[in-house]
Length: 426
Ligand code: NIG
Ligand code: FE
Image (cartoon, rainbow, N blue to C red):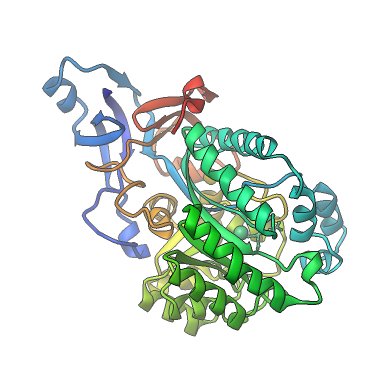
């Protein structure tokens, strides 16, 4: 399948010649061009040129003209939890009345609440829920997500969650990059035997997941009252021995040193980092660990502080942005909104925020050089916005200006509506 996509508006290609995760200064260059055309063959970008260059070189190919709209790579959302059974609006209401996230978790709510609800859900029902949620990602311009398990917390239910992600990836245009997060919480039946649950993770879940090839990375919720730094290290080293990449939920609520562990283990990313120490942030930078910022989560939980985004940018860390889509702390799939929050809270420019949500986000999930840019050899994923320029993307607040989404060269959203091609296989 071959096609030419062309337009006359502002294109942010992220094709700047800088390899690897980019620091803030490098992200200032979003590879902007005024007007462009792209040759796509079999879902991969072959060539990028001026607006009329590719159509005149390849006059026999069909042309999709996107006019003067803003064109960017499809968003890459590098941190989501899309496999759950039920929303948790009751907990939202409790928090609005002043009960904290930790207090709700201590009372057996939070992640354990979701785990109770997910167990026993039939595989087809789980898959249908993930597919519905995948539609929402595409509608917001996201073409690749990292998708975590972590609401199963038992061998069977974690396997079922990862199989739902695998099957959704096959049945949906959205690309899913699977991460095992069995270490999301200690489930009810192991509250008096933490060690028993850690053994289950290391001795049973991880080997079986690796055998079945169900995950590319392993993540741990490293947090006070959840998994300590030492426990997280054991779990992650076991995962590494099985060939998995490493990620961490680090220093979100209490500063226990998860960011330092991510640096020590050269993880792909450390995420949240709301209360990470300066020393650990420097260590992350030196170890090349991407800092995944989740400003929608700190907003939604109304945390007393947000990640020190400005400081991270000044220190030279490579920032990525994600929704953290999940039923407890961030029920949103709107990456444009996350970009706005990053500009407001971390002082990012539109170019930096976009680069953090595409180029660097791809590096945070082991997809660097494959998605997150409009350049030869990259997957032909585009988000096309009803906007005049990149600066107006974060300016419009909590709106969805996505007009067209192209996944592997095929339109899957047009005029803001999902097309049947969204479901014809990824
Ligand atoms: O990334 N922090 C841990 N996991 C999720 C929240 C999960 C939940 O509350 O269900 C997060 O914020
Ligand atoms: Fe998370």
